[in-house]
Image (cartoon, rainbow over all chains, first blue to last red; front, side):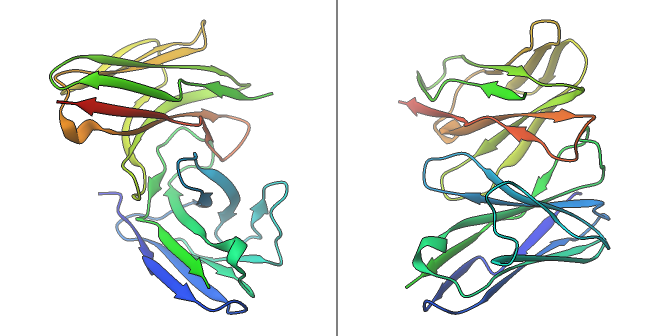
Length: 117
Length: 110
């Protein structure tokens, strides 16, 4: 149980392109979904927290107009990197949880490796 | 504030036992999680402790002392495939999110 699917697993595209990443909880309803970014050999950096039907809460320093998050249902959240540039190249990982108060594990998708040329 | 400390790197030998420590400071503590992350992959959940004591799951055990703000992950009978980063994360009543440590990169040698 508790499977999270993230798609696509890898994207290579030109600078200026917008890229959409999907995160789905396959066998449970996710009250909350999280989006992380990870640089090589570094830990997870939380970008934003999204709850179904409400606006995402972004961490300090994360541009909400650059990283658009939509959490349309209890099983789907999307992250759109708008007008991506080479500095946006990174490993993006989503996770989903069944709780709003941090006492249940987050279950992670397999991640999306984004490379902007 | 919230803070989590764990060693950056550790090495061990195949078949040995290794203990990865994690100390934390947080308000509204609501559990501590350990995750394993292999290079280039997403983290996978290993264990959750909310009460003091030891939780055992096969070769892996996790310990928590809330009064000391301290946890450790114990890996027994190490295998080469255990080479990975191990992330300590803390949950809080005050927020939806988990606070992750920087991770401990464990290398297991033959």
